[in-house]
Length: 212
Image (cartoon, rainbow, N blue to C red):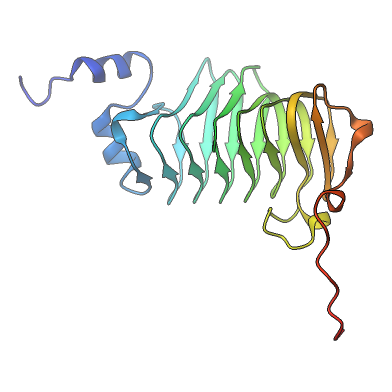
């Protein structure tokens, strides 16, 4: 077989709007870490920065006029699915996505899923429609997030929990909620704005320095 004739797998990739394996290696792995090029599906119109890490079985694609823009130094763990059909997904820098599975589904024309920097989104979270997830925010667990805003703050490594970004954790639908910096809504079942609490309710604040 001639070297310039695509394999059946590459032909299928092209037909579905994804890069071929060779293109993944040339255009993505040349400036990012790609652990398994054959299991990474990247759409031809997806824009990717530098120093991201892509584990196996990650799919990122846009269609129907949608778009995906990824910054730098993000980790995409196995089981990540990012799809923008008509909408837009924007991801900043230093996020950890998909530990235990993650779906980002921008399926509404003109609407945006925007993720800041240094957040965590994992354990089966589904984020769809419109979402504004500020820097340091977290979605932990099989939470279905739709039309929500999580305030920006420090990352999960910030010692003072009340300075961290907003958090949703647990399981169930979370719709039309606003969680500001330092707060969390935790639920198993439908999430309710009225149950929001300071993060220090779950995580004690660091002890004061007696020398100050």
